Image (cartoon, rainbow over all chains, first blue to last red; front, side, top):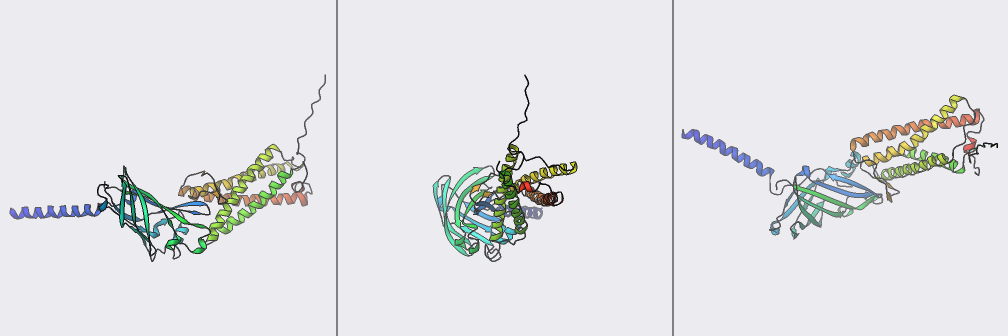
Length: 189
Length: 188
């Protein structure tokens, strides 16, 4: 009798552990839900605004207005996932002269400091690393509650040339300034 | 009291106005350029030149569209001279072909504009003025509009071919003034 109870207990314990492990993996604090989040780069090509979305990325944002010191944000973007709406151009930007996705598959952002501005705004500062070059960015972020979860929105501008993206021959046709707009949703909250 | 009814002679009805002649040849020339560009640009590998050429092609297309609209308005307000005497089937063909030409000259740039929008690219005329989107971003629709733009383009090529052949026939075979009057620079 005692042995049977022990086996049942063991199975229950195993089951619970696996469940806990699974939910922990799925719901690591602040994990961004890619399905409802977007990262869109906009740049001008001879005056024409082109919107291109990065379709694959991961991110974590931990922010509590009452405990800003413990806040952190990070994002890993797959450079080969930029969608310009045309496969020929998508293939072009993966090449060496652009993102060189084969050598640098990910662009990353890591915060070194976060300053709370108010309950729904904070400024994240940290290196943005693309194609092996790291430049410090200061990004204002707005926090809001949406049906899909807690949303973090913001815009920042980068110089593509500063990261070595796009050979000089493109400079007359494609502007240097790229606006990156993100809408990152944490569905756990 | 007797009154004589006099049919007023419509101004410019005995010959094409200079405006009509200028528009005809300008539009024709621009269409040839746009067609050539459209053909070449799709063959180019991804490069700054290819991007440039796509934009020039779009700007040319919009320019043509604007001029064709002007041509339509002008033709309505300044009717073309009546067709010269010719067999009925030729007169009907001429009328029909001209209608086809006008429809294509409006439809092709229209389809092109819509295709660009559906593909996610607004048209910024001359890189300066952003034109309104006539359709919203839609990948499937873009593919269909591109096909339409191309097919209509080939139809225009055929129509222009017929148009030119007919003009030459009237000039060299029939020896009438059909072509000549589109080359006359006469005051109104």
